Length: 243
Image (cartoon, rainbow, N blue to C red; front, side):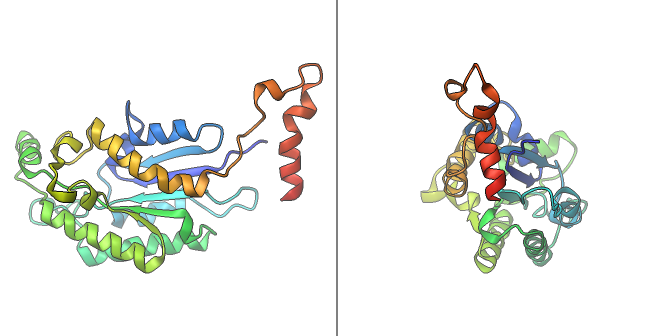
């Protein structure tokens, strides 16, 4: 069996929606085609309290397969909900921080080194836009941008502490006082421009880790049409012998 290296995208709804048209995950998958399988493990509405329990069911140590080439962990938008307005999704800041550490430690325990892990902070919140969404569902405003910033800072701190890469969306999307609303479709989730922004910042990080991976199976013009099998599988056999 020919196996592709795997990239796991693990997160909440912003990850789950990443394979929609113009989504950041779909663009990455296209760039990595025939090099990696990009697996979407986004879970809409989930927080790190639940995610840390699920992660060991998604990624395990297998003797017959290589560890994932990269894993993104992208939570915080739900954890940072206001407890008084959204107790179902809210996770206190200290617990959120510990949960990120727990997930990183687990990945390291199944041979995924820190350099293969990428943390992504929650994006900013545009409160007027998100408040409209809340009112339409009969709720009060249940997220604040300042709180999202606290969770983003905690995520950055965990990355620095654990030696993983961090993509600080919350800061980058507001850098220089720029208007972040163009990056958000409803005040919380990403617009097309937001998806493009995320992918354009994440790709250079992934490219450094994955750019040297070989193209799987030879270019079609390099296949010997009269005797295809040796030319099709020469590199795969060579790789297997070297491993």
